[in-house]
Length: 524
Image (cartoon, rainbow, N blue to C red; front, side, top):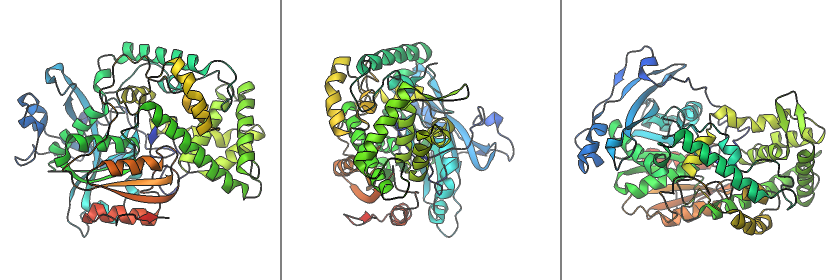
């Protein structure tokens, strides 16, 4: 979606990224310099002598930090430039070979302000292409930010037009143990834990066959090192960064690795790195319950609310709809099947965006057998270029993101999930085995990130954010030695660039002038 529209969001099942409907279509080979057309290329500089580079500590990496970026106009995106760069498959063993990273930039306008440097943008995920997301969102930045920064995005390793993870499986569906699982809020039906475990085993086997060599090397820590490589090649002494949702976890990981390289960093929709995969899922279940109750209260006050006149009634109606669709899915033509899972996908998308008007329409239509509004909410996933394969591969290398519960552990955890979130407890509990059979161990354990010695880092949290609950933003801001929390008292996932004037002004002031908002600032 465009920022102004705010009409829908992505499937939220463990996935944390910017809400949007559609992004610009990415040409399969558009980011290869040979595929780009006039104007002539703009050749990058080798890293200036004063730019700090890990290559000074490991001469085997020096060639990566000396490469020149060959920027050319992106086909179909004439206001952007595209390039590719080489990165080591394994930073600890550069002799193991290279991977390709695709990047894009929109140069600073320079209108009335000195250029500060590059602002690296990540929309979240994991598995979300950053390049097409920046193409979609660039127009939402203020003139002051556009004047001061080149806007830059790189598709993380494993994602989009960078060297991709391809498993040949429905990794996203498998990660949530899809079908048949009647009773989103109940406890009846086939064993959700066994189904989830079997699906996770199938996904792990498919990914090991299809992308085994790449799987150990697509974690968040490796992507953070790629960000520092790009910083050097861009000629920036420090990394200025804007990360949303999972992008906040990536940014915090970068700050933990390279605190002295941090410039002006904004982490919106923050992830708490101390949580393990189980507690992270439980927090999301709680977050979506809070968001649903907020939506239901608003809906109940409107005439013709499709889910009744109180939050309690709304919950009962949603449960009834999910159970009914599991027993008898709606069918539109030969390709569209809407079951209970589809409805919950649409609801979580609508809560994340937030897109309450569209969600009311979807619920109203489903009650009479229609699916068009629901398909708009669910269809955001395909439109974004999101990769379920990359999502699982990156998630499972993180102790904070990738749950590895056995079926017995998942069954034992289910009652707490249902108490925490009657509407969405089972929905999230079904992901508890996502990484149980992953062939590669996690390389990033859960734990605090302090980033001692870094420049100030601005953390933005939304009080009723379903995907990254507000408690996680508070926790990350406390952990960071230089963290400052900016609170948005509102609904939806992330706040900056979402037409919240107070938030936009505070973040812009920090990015352009380095001035943090006062401690305790709350935007309403």
